[in-house]
Length: 258
Image 1 (tube, rainbow, N blue to C red):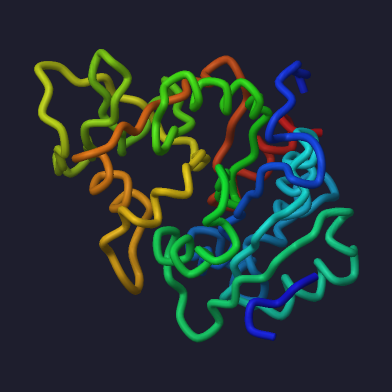
Image 2: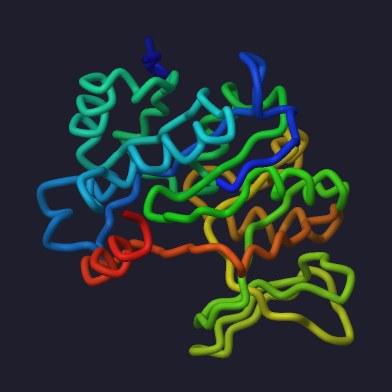
């Protein structure tokens, strides 16, 4: 392991195969406030679903598509995450730690901090508390077909916060149906609401388009980049996906992911 400071089959072969394959980043630095009391003494990344931690499950999920170069950012109980990775030898993957112990940077700031590891090729990001069996090869194929700078995994499920797309599958904005707050980057006659799954594929050129600094969300990045570049959606509503963001989500996750 390096430290920053010191299923359904597919014929798509690149960049998922071989040592020059696609890289990934797992966002695992969050405080996990919705997952208390577990997160009073542990990081959410190490919460267990059917005998495996969320972190291990996501690393093994990426491995199914030949992705074994993975950046993991850490902050909350960072030492516990690092020890588990070291004890398990990365579960067979090469894990690079992006250290945010001084300050948690959220998903956008965390991505920018890890730029040096991801800036040379197409890469994927996933939130550690997301479990899914979405076909990443199909996801990448859609990303390429759309010729997008970013492609977001989305579904038709109900939520309070939606990403808004136009009829051409281009991201236009964001809406909170609970507070009625809305942010529009690309005006359109009509918007299609989709729920974001916490997984995205990026072209490395996105780093040149990030204007934010410090602590910020990937949603902020999406809405900024959408004003001048295409961000597309990949609808994987036929696959399983769950946000294991709360302790009560674990039982449902265990029924979905044996």
